[in-house]
Image (cartoon, rainbow, N blue to C red):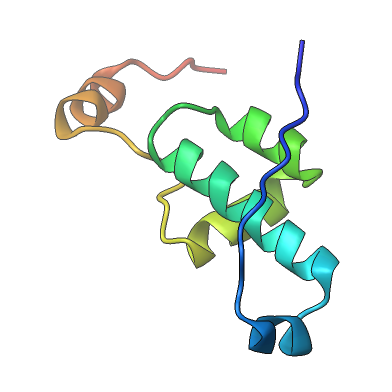
Length: 88
């Protein structure tokens, strides 16, 4: 299930002369989704779905917001690297 959220806040007039309303809406949605992703409250797949992006575009956006694509603790990384790779 999902719910629509409508936000109402004031922005300076000069922003409206520089940006279209849909650009502002896109930036607000993008910023919220990226912050939730940074906080590990959304998966990459869900973030891509909410923004209507494929994984490549999501990774580009994550780079823009300086969010690592692979976000493991040193212990998690060590554990992953120690796992055996399947042999073909």
